Length: 120
Image 1 (cartoon, one colour):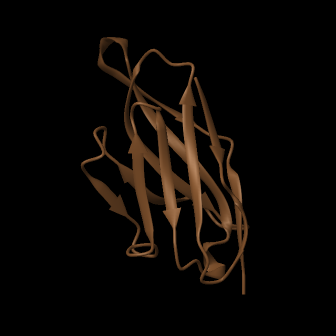
Image 2: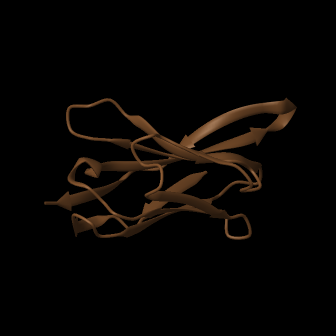
């Protein structure tokens, strides 16, 4: 199973970026997916997650109203639309997919991360 993030880069404060996370190589169902981020010298933190069908999302307070998570299950892809970016959003962004394995077991897979830099 492979998760590949894309769409990172450098943007000025107030700008927008859209990250993608594509899942490949799995025959198992993809359930909840999530975005995390890790800034230099800080612990990895949850940005938000989206339910299996995409009907439910939840966000960290720091990004509510600015970030939107969506998914296209036909493409096994999750997205993170980031608007009104701030310098404090600078971090490496990681996606995580939880797969339903045989015998009702769940396993988390992570992407390699993509850098987002917001300049002031």
